[in-house]
Structures are given as C-alpha cells and as structure tokens.
Length: 243
Image (cartoon, rainbow, N blue to C red):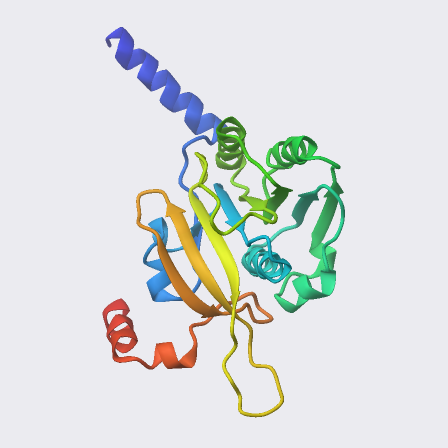
C-alpha cells in the first residue's frame, strides 16, 4: 500500500474511533416542505446549528421556544449555557421541554459560554447543548462542530439580539435559522390565536435557503403549517408526492 493510501486509511480509522465525520440520525419537523430542504429529512443530530431571532425581544423569545421545541423531541438532559440566567422556564415547558430536563450553566461571558459548550459536548447521551452568544468565530464553530460529531450530541448556538439584516459570518454550522414573530390568525373574537413565526432557513449545507410561515410549537414541541396553507392545492399536491 502506498504511503498516501496508508495515511488516508489511518485517518479514516481514527475518525471512526473518535466519531468524527459519522452520520447521526435526523429529527424531522413533520412538515414535508421543511424536512425536504434538510439533508437526511430532518435536523441533523450530532452537529452544530445556529439559531437567531432579532434585536426585538419578541423575536428572541420566539427563537428560544423554537429551540425548546426541538430539544423536547430528543431524549436526554439539556445543558443551556448563557451569560446570565434569564430563561423563562414555563415557556420552555409549554413547548414540551420540562424544566427538570434543563441544566443551566451561568458562564458570565461569551468566551466562557463557548468553553462550557465544548466541555458539555464531550458527553454523549444528552439531548443537546445550547450556548447563547453574541458572536461566534469560524474557529470556534469548527471546534463545536467536531465536538458534536464526536459525541453525537447536538449543539445549538443561539445568537441573542442578532439584527435581522446582520451580515452572515463564516461558520461550520450545518444549518442557520432565524425565527421572527408573525401575526396570528384573526379569530373574530377578543382572543389570541396560536402564535405564528416567520421561520427562515438562512443556510443549510448542501441546500438552498427557504422561509415558511409556521404555527409555533405545541405542547409536544411540534410545528404546524397554518390551515390556510395546508389546504392550498400546492400543499395538497406536495402531500400526495410525499406519500
């Protein structure tokens, strides 16, 4: 065997031992038009993902609940790393993520949040690790992606108060999402309908960006398409093809 082939074989064996480069299961959203945009038919586990709202508090709150809904559908405890503890546990619970599953890590700074994330990601069996930061360098994202691949634990970088028109930075994340609050359906009575979001897939490795208007997570962490969109002829054709 030639030397380059030997080196390639050794690298492959080391990657297999460390778990680097392995393909892990995906967590589907249950919406065909959304899952069809994602490699593997859902959100990749054992990988790094970025999520952002905007400078508006309502959008950051929507992004928080979006994250909670995803984690609610993955078994295991959750490490939520942040600069200071300001999570509203009842809102997470309404999205299916019980507070007893969430371990808060108050790190005090972006640097410490990233260090805590990397340490937590070394442990398999977790539902996920969330890190709230303002900025993320390409080097830091690569370290988090490698740690997630190795353990199979999913990593989420939550970009707090990120302006909706912010210039996208280079990242090793598999996907980048933006969640913005959208008007609920008018009910015709003094009441509130199910919350809606403008859900934007701004970046996906091997795919194209896309946006959807979705109904916010229910008590099991599941999203839904508004009834008017589901009943459109195009949506019906999409369901026929998916089946």
